Every structure is written in C-alpha cells, then in structure tokens.
Amino acid sequence: MLSADTWVRLAGRAGRAPFGWVAGWGRLVWLGAVLIVLALSPSSWRPRARSALAHHVYTDTAPVLPGFTALSALLTLVITRIVVVTAQSYGLSQYALEMVVRVLVLELIPLGAALVVALRCTIPNGAAMATMRQAGHFDRLRAHGVEPLTQEAVPRLVAGVFSTITLAALSSFVGTVLAYLAVYGLTEAGLPAYSRMFGRVFDGTVSLIFVLKTLAFSLAVSVIPIASGLRDKEVKGSRESAALQGLVRMFAVLLVLEAVSLVGNYY
Image (cartoon, rainbow, N blue to C red; front, side, top):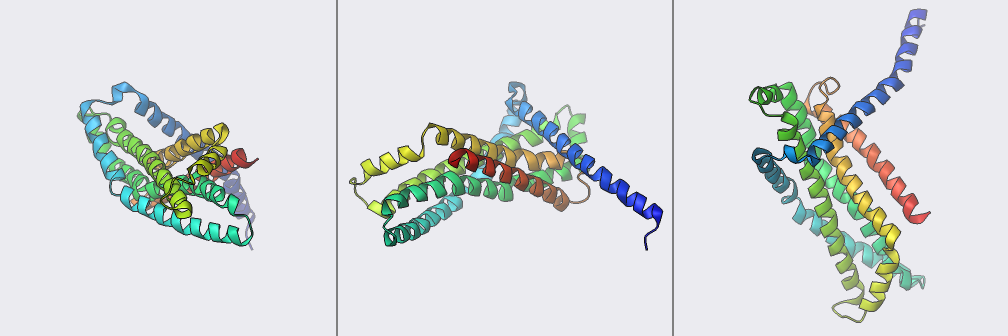
C-alpha cells in the first residue's frame, strides 16, 4: 500500500512531465534555429569551416549514394512489376504507372533517403557532438578563438541536408526512368502517354509539396539529432543516449511531416 507522501510525489512528477516535455522541445527548436541561422550566415564560412564542410559532404554522401540508388532501382523494378501485373489482372493497367510514380517518387524515396541519411550520418554526428562537448573539445576550441558550433556542428548539418536532397533527387530520377523502361522497354512509343501521366501527377501543387517535403525531411534529419547532441544538460551519459533521444524526436517529426504531405496531396 502506497503512503500519502508517495502518492503526492508521484502526482508531482506526473504534473511536471508535460512541462518538461514542452520545455525540452522548446530548447531543441531554439537550438535548431540557431544552427540554421549560423548555416545561412556568410560570416560562418571561413576557409577552415569550408574545409570541414567539404569533408563532411563527401563522407556523408559518397559512401551512401551508390548503395541507396541501387536499392531504389531494385525496389522500383519489383514494385512496378507487381503493380503492373496486378492492375492488368483487374483491367486497370492504365492506372498502374501512375500508382507506381505516386507511391515511389512522391512517398517512399524521399522518406527512405531521409531515414538512410539519418541512420548512416546525422544520428552518429549528433552523438559525436554530445561526446565532444562532454569531453571538453568545445571549450578547447573556444580557447583558441574558434566558435565550436560554426566549426563542428554547422558543417555536419549542411552535409546532412545536402546528402538527403541528393539521394532523393537522384533516386527519384532513376526510379522514374526505370518505371518507364519496365513497362515500355527501350522504345519511344510510350513517351507521350508517360509524359501526360507524369504531368498529371506532378501538377503545380504536388510538385511544390514534394519539394517542400524533401527539404523539410532533410532539415529534420539533420537539425534534430545534432541539436539533441548539443544540449549538454539533457543529453546525459553515453553516445547511445544522445543517439536514442535524437532518433525518437526525429521519427516523430518525420511522421508529422509525412502525414501533412499526404493530406496536401490527396485531400
């Protein structure tokens, strides 16, 4: 049987939990805004920072690009074949390619690119930020007159955005071409119908939503893990704790963004 004091303490903790959750998100949003402003500021891009940016852009993009593009191509061929055969059996073959383009290019490829970059690059980068801050690396940089956010955090953030957009753009192009080849083969006969279908899918509103969603995905998977790793009071313990906190918050934001884009595209 719990005592009255125990019940009071539990009630106090339950009452403080929502305020702590809101405060944590507020600090995360503030720090993310600071990082974005620094990334957009020309004064942040001195030669040393540009060198760090080039390094992180290469290491966050080049190793991932071939594998993700190949996986997207394989997924495109498999899904296209399944959808086309299924649509033909129901007499709906005229809608097969439109369904493939909508599912793959509009939804799966941008989300897949964001998740791959997050798991491969930005979440480890966020954990590295927490480790460097706890080890005193940021203090040593300040002692030498170097701003640690500009030198360490901003290049990683920009590299994550660049990697996500590059993977999504290239894989969408490859998927679009392979979907056509899977249905029509190496012929120009299907280009007029395919172009009309593609223009019908990617009208002005859908194209704008696609661009904004891809940009929002890239910012979410880049800003949230790094900002989580930089919050020294709330990121306690090991690199794994920083990575876990960034992962949970990032997935929540991605889910909201995907839901908003679905509403914009289909309602």
